[in-house]
Image: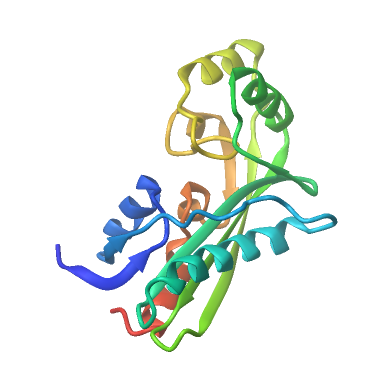
Length: 190
């Protein structure tokens, strides 16, 4: 497949694979190393938008004149952002919190064009999750497929516990393809 003339500011294999699905593989992949701390009183949507924008501008700062694609995805329960669990105990707590509840997955996409102008879109997806048994939670945590992502990986065994998705499945995986394709097309990537 022909690679397109843009940089993906993420080392996420899920994002790369999603771009491959729609025939928009980046010419380069450069992870954006930024401080991902939340600001006091920052809403989840403001946070995820800021992260996508900061990742894009971080990579753009060392690659002027290039088209940059960045994204950030978070799982939100109420107003609380669920960050990546560092160990099994933290992931167990996350799964208990998600069990039998609805939650949102916010995915912000930022594209910087060759002139350095940024365009940003936010995808919000509502997820309804079944009430998980103690055994289901322990098996999911022990399987470790959640490692490296916030909340869980829907594209694994967790999908069997999701009763309804209202919004973008690809946004839950980590890159909402509708918004991404439109932003890249707008920047001249076809």
